[in-house]
Length: 345
Image (cartoon, rainbow, N blue to C red; front, side):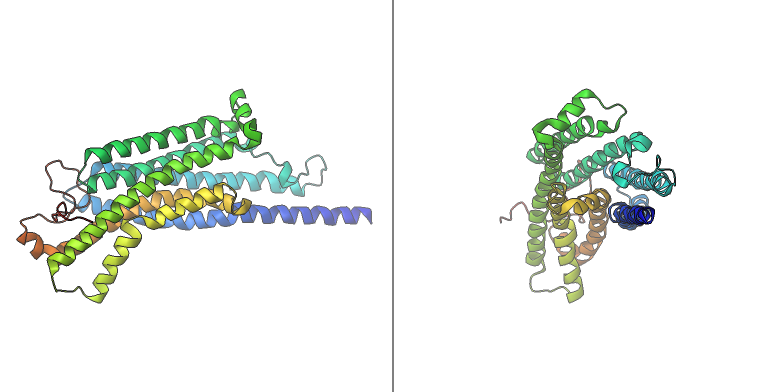
């Protein structure tokens, strides 16, 4: 009878551990896979558009490719880590040998995937840092490369790079066998809260960069929209086109949603939404950090063609060129090509 009760307790424990794996790893990986599939389609479309475009922005495209490669590696690492966890934990948990039987709490992922976990931490930091480059670079180009934005962008990128470098050195290296002594000491400082504090500070640099880029793009979008209304006079766009332009400006081009997602990411990394929220965020945020900067570039390219058709007469009257949001040529006109410099808020 005692043996039967022990077996039932053991099976209940295994069932709870399997449920925890599903909640913290399997289902988040499914979401990550869906996001990665969307990113793959988006990147393929962007590549086709890039090769068809006569004015290619090699810098942005190269960063987007690097971002996609890093997200691909991140997705592959998550699959491999889940496979190792299931491959090593499940057989041991179901083993009749008491010496091999263990719970999920006893399972040491570092013993079977130390190098993968180290690479996982590095890749995550690279993705977040590259997303800052794309967002800030685009805001800098759209504003016509003014010196003050250039200095601010470089300062934000420097802070972001230092923050993520510290994450790699002080947090990711804990997965090495054996971990450096200074890393062990750091993790025990501030009553064990030093890793959370460093992670929050590092992610805050990216959040600050996105808020800055979002503010710039929101202002440019508002000025551009106002200029179009002034140039068009009493003519009104069709309801469908007006709705499309509004959605593109507010939701995509300004990056408001992306910035809000970063704020949510900061909160969940502080365990505000519990352990489950933290575990899920490590899966979806990396893919979002790759998708959104690329999506902005692609959507802006599509929007430009729409605006060119709708404002070509007004642009010609002002003796301006076509609209362009992504040029890096120094001899090209300003990104919006409507004389907004004389317009005030």
